[in-house]
Image (cartoon, rainbow over all chains, first blue to last red; front, side, top):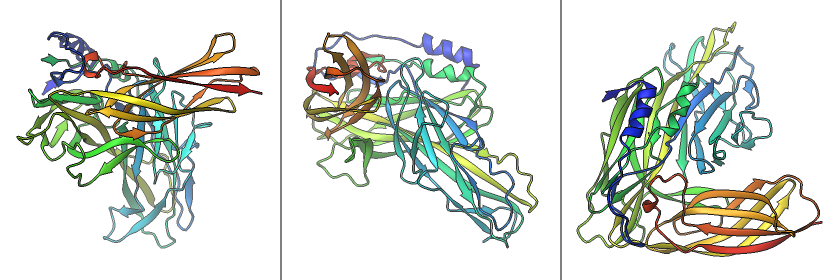
Length: 175
Length: 277
């Protein structure tokens, strides 16, 4: 394991760039044991999904265009297509109460948005996070993809106080 | 043997003040030669918290759905007619923790069957990173209820294993184009030839009657069997007149630092006329 400050890692990326081997004839097999791209893929959170005050007995929605929607920025290969898929919870579990204390959470057909190279959900591509979408990175110079997600929590009147937790899985597949 | 690790570009993200989720994965496609039978993927954690990573594999390949969207088709139990490497490719380690600002390497080791035919075999590598808690901020509820979501990021990249003579090509047909508002939408049918995936780029040029290029697009894609991709490009409002869409598919990829990994193939071209009333 190597511990590197970011600038050093960038430098290392350049230092280990080694090319050897003669050019090969067209159609010949290629010898390579590791590859060879100018970019990887990285994901960063721009904003957490924030439901705010959650009163009992009242559904609390967050739209993907809202200021408190979850937002991510993905950096990858310019213009490349990428599959965006979510694995979503249907129930959140109260981790402070006895087992079985849950709260429903729902995502609609318009709960997610993706947009290439533009950090503004307005005008983006709305999609159902349950079924996913094919997104696309931005052009050279701005090879980014933005994703926003909202949802609705609906604590019952009898919901027990405490912290309710669930998991969202985001899958990004280079196509 | 070519050995290239090139990770810098994606780390431009590090210069931002964003909170990292998961790990950076490089490269986004791995090619392994039969004579070497191993490869590697670099994971880097640009965040401030350790990231737990789990590695897994499956078989799948890009194709298109009925609307032309490129999607990943997965096959849980690929039969012998599919060029799957999932049964004999392993990743090590399968579980690891990447500390903040540290990097680790995942090794890929192939144990192909002895009688493996020449050709290219595929699998998908899943890098699942548990990125910690996603706190729900701003909760000052009166009911004593707080809601939090944890986030797991799965990055799925392609791995190709090449044995012996591999070749590829693409047959282009049924090119269509339509202007929808300010957007040029194109479709085509791409059928792969040879025994390896066609990795290339679709280039489109919209040319007016005077020969001037009014819009252009480049779309990297891979043709594994047959696909009919829909590619949309904002071109703005065009004056009335006749236009030609010059559509070509080339075996070139800007994102591959070593062009030898992109198998050579003839350029496929076609053009269609568009009328803006």
